[in-house]
Length: 180
Image (cartoon, rainbow, N blue to C red; front, side, top):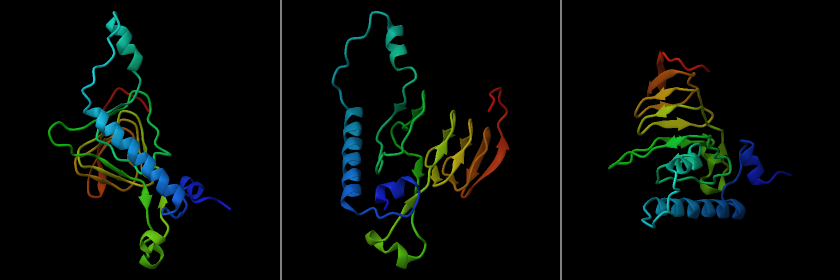
């Protein structure tokens, strides 16, 4: 018999309000809170290397994340090399990724007693999601795609295309020297 976490990781219906998953959400929330606190931390960094290129090389391919962030579990969050998750100065207007789904039938959904599910979201390299965009579960966004501000992405966007609107629709191909 599968555990609720195993069902969740396979994208099947699972019950989220069980002790193990409640604890997992709490641990992830604590980690996000620590990260969000560190973002504003004024503690001095270690002294730089004599050669500034050493400092730059140390982190050049690491993900860069501007807080604050909020994640439920973090089990399946994977970030590629050299990714930048941006915050907007003065007024953070995030792009939201919603991988969770719930049954449409309210009798099955049944508040915290019913099951939920999740589907992966794949965002390829060199994509740009403008502020207040929403990406729903099961969506793949191809390499180099741009999602317009306030757009709701309900289905896949091909590589090197611009999608805008609610629901988002592809409006044009991006001319580029990059290849898929």
